[in-house]
Length: 266
Ligand SMILES: C[S@@+](CC[C@H](N)C(=O)[O-])C[C@H]1O[C@@H](n2cnc3c(N)ncnc32)[C@H](O)[C@@H]1O
Image 1 (cartoon, rainbow, N blue to C red):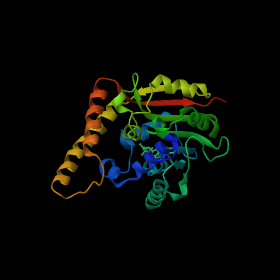
Image 2 (cartoon, protein in one colour):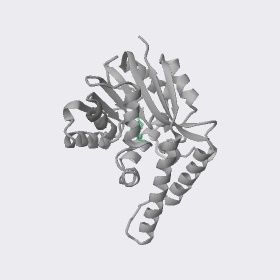
Image 3 (spheres, rainbow, N blue to C red):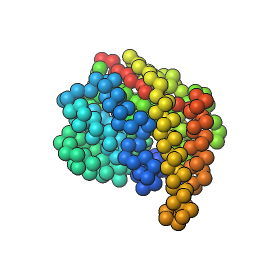
């Protein structure tokens, strides 16, 4: 533990976790279940079009922002707490030739560094669950959207209380410890003024991702055993335990993945 406030520690830890080589090893650059197919579906859900100005809150390494700009011709601003993620996102956009359609900023989802209402649409993938103060994050999302602006989130959800063994810092950054029920996310968004909700169960996408990670964990364990890989102080056993537990919990319906789309009324 550091002397940071626990909320700050979660944000710092989450950002550095998702900037690490290790996460790249397991997930690549698309840091959410469902891959870019689900990102496209999200864009279609909220009717993205050319000329729209979109904010991607907690954009990670910019894979979705770049993909949305390429696919829908919209302008996407990505914001992330991790400075290295922001730099990687800028490099990715330049590589793909869409730097003119994208912009990336360092910042906190709970205190967005934008004026009121500059965006037509907002997405946030697999990140809302990691924000310690979800009401502040939702309030900020509503503030930066123009009236009639559209919101689409995909996130880890639970069907009841998060089991006690999933309350660790690792579970926070793996998006489990801070997850809530879909209706709780809807209530938080409703409370700050969103309406016109569409809710879709995407738990199959989460199960697929966890199973992929489990396969890679076995390959990594083998490489460590053969002395071909050094994981430093990473606790591979804890990672394996968490992944096994995640499968159990997804299959039993305790943990899931949900798409929530909504509108900010005029
Ligand atoms: C699971 S990753 C998802 C990244 C990206 N949305 C994607 O799907 O590829 C979670 C992201 O949330 C970012 N993050 C965590 N807390 C944040 C905060 N308070 N404000 C902005 N970004 C945050 C992390 O840096 C990380 O990039």
